[in-house]
Amino acid sequence: MLTSRDLDAFFRDGWNRHDVDVLMTFMSNDCVFESTAGPEVCGTRHAGRERVREAFARVFTAFPDATFADARHFVAGNRGVSEWIFRGTTADGKKVEVNGCDVFTFADDKIAVKSSFFKNRTA
Image (tube, rainbow, N blue to C red; front, side):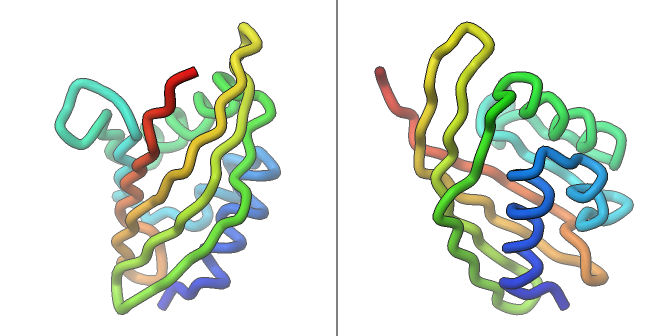
């Protein structure tokens, strides 16, 4: 079963080090990533390891200095939540800082679904 420590490592060793390979070690074979924005009610739904890997990599392309700070996690059975502050700068120099969270569904000691949410902040 995944723990809060596992989620801490997911953010520390994967997201904050910009290491997609590490991120993918936490994801199940049939994983899903529901991003914060997109045309679907859940944002954009990326299904399968290759699509999830590509979506994670695009975050680092869009925000080369992306970090998740002050992360707090809790796990209850096969569900988990991480709250964080996302900070990053776009290629055109726009700074972004927002509170957000991920809601997780776990299966077989891996992340099966990562659904991301954050505050929509105006400049």
